[in-house]
Amino acid sequence: MKLVESVPNFSEGRRKEVIEGIVNEARKIRRVWILDYSSDPDHNRSVVTLVGEPEPLLEALFKMTKKAAELIDLRKHTGEHPRMGATDVIPLVPIMNVTKDECISLSRILGERIGNELNIPVYLYEQSATSPTRENLSNIRKGEFEGFSEKIKMKEWKPDFGPDKVHPSAGVVAVGCREFLIAFNVNLGTDNIEVAKKIAKAVRHISGGFRYVKALGFKLEERKIVQVSMNLTNFKKTPIHRVFEVIKLEAERYGVPIVGSEIVGLIPLNALSSVADFYLRLEKFDSSTVLENKILQKIVEEE
Image (cartoon, one colour):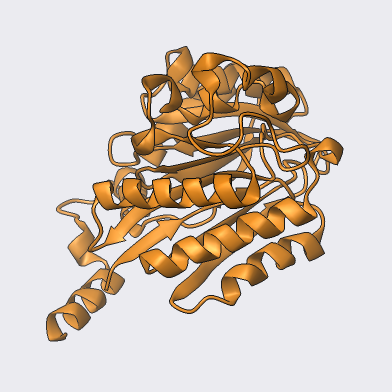
């Protein structure tokens, strides 16, 4: 069996009926499994984690993108998280018996279909990118929905697929093959957004921080605190505990406590194992000592 993971992000985190309507499109497709989905009202964004066989997964992602375009109007959308599309980004991650090149090919198939059938401009990003400037999602998203009508007129920002003008309500979407990404947020015991922004700047790669960290500072209005919101794009080379320790040190500089952290979506067991190894100072520890890993190994061997 070939399995691909996808974690599409949708620009709606407040209207439950809209989120359910989008997720229901994936529920209709056989050989596609919804592993998790969560919404954040402050970010006004939902993240869905799916895994499936390649062709059914592409069908599910297309149907979800179509439904999102029907139900979400970005002209009426506000939220803390940067966004450029109703379906903002669709990553494809090779999981089982699938190569990176196959996922790149799948991203092009999906992108072309979205562009042709839904009239939504599509940009290929990360490992699927057609130019170096499009590898980083933040470069593509810069200007967001409100600024994209002018941006798309520039020669260097001609879409990879679809029309050369922004969809009036659904915006544009990025599709691409990438490594496993961990969405990791750290909440701070203050309402001072400048503290969160300074700490985010200290850890993110683009401003001199960790190579595989993207970070922004956000307000969580409902809780009256602020958050350092991050994407860890390679947890093997930049582990969670290393980033957390620097955030803790930076927060101490400003006399601010960490009141909690969260994982958005799913996370590989190996990523948490490395955290346990670091904080517990475990000796001679590796993933083979994890009960669930040993059980899965035995099941695979018997098959």
